[in-house]
Length: 454
Image (cartoon, rainbow, N blue to C red; front, side, top):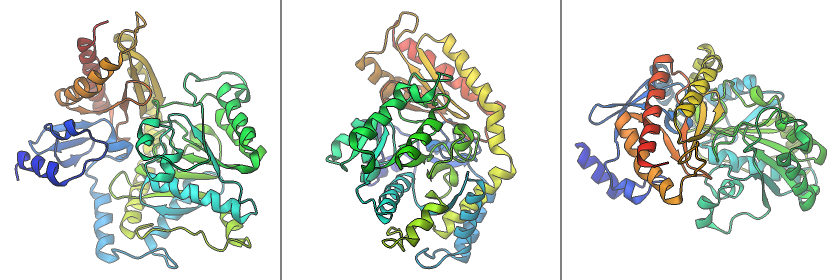
């Protein structure tokens, strides 16, 4: 089929994800091949994948070694479950992850996506507290504008009203507290910050004996790459320890090199009780997610009078092909020192984005770290004018999509709390690729300024 036929067939038979009808009726790209930091469409045009797929293609496209691992595993053992049995690739993936994870986070429960990972963490913390004689601990605290997934439990924890509204009522007992927007760097004693004091206030309001867990990302994606202030995560850890609450670090985006470390601990210095992961664990070459749990918690659940089993599972959880891909991907990431590359290049990328901010009146702020950034837009920084709602829609639905096509650089326009441009290149991107990425962003910002008068 030619591209016109492919689009027509997709419109009739393929259900798109988070895609507006008018976008699905447009000449959307159809990608047929990936090469390093680039996607190639049906016309043979190369597009720089500035979002690494959806924050996931950390090792880049077209890795023959990762593809070979998948093919060999499919030809050897395409499927076996982890229900009362195991297989070498899931065992090896769990071992490698345990070696890289902080503290005693040594047990990995594999699922298939980030949403499932959060769903699994929700179920674990509830069953854990129940097994320890505290069945009333069912409530969850998460942060405003945080995205934690789309399944009903994960969506309940998510703090984005716009994507929750069509599906209510959701799980009860979820409280959302202020995020760290506006709090960066050294802000003094972290336990005195409003964004921390609000958490303790909610714990006391709900009753500490009813709260199961606090969910937070090391760098929050929703509202635009929010890097926490110094001391924030130690303050979270101290609050959870004080009130017997489990701390869940949602690292679906942040783990496996995105921040320059295998896990968020490298940024926060804090060992959480559970870590959720997905995207970068396979660099998108196969579906995989999981929850890493402190071994002590697993032992306490299994050994308790009401324990003996974590009452949860999935047919594809720990799939042989997906876990074989994870082993190949994580091993290559470690051996090629990819997190170290991000640590070296990330500050340069950040500085270049700050230079673009200085050069463009439409940039309000640049936030992020490693290879993970948000560029927040406004109408005129010098005049202090924000975008109107109509201007925001114009930028997100017209200007930026056309800029992506014109520049050949794919990024993501974001409307979660502000009008933003998300930047998340493959972690293997070198100087030439990053220069091309920055040139494309420069052009996009120029397009915004042409469309929106000061």
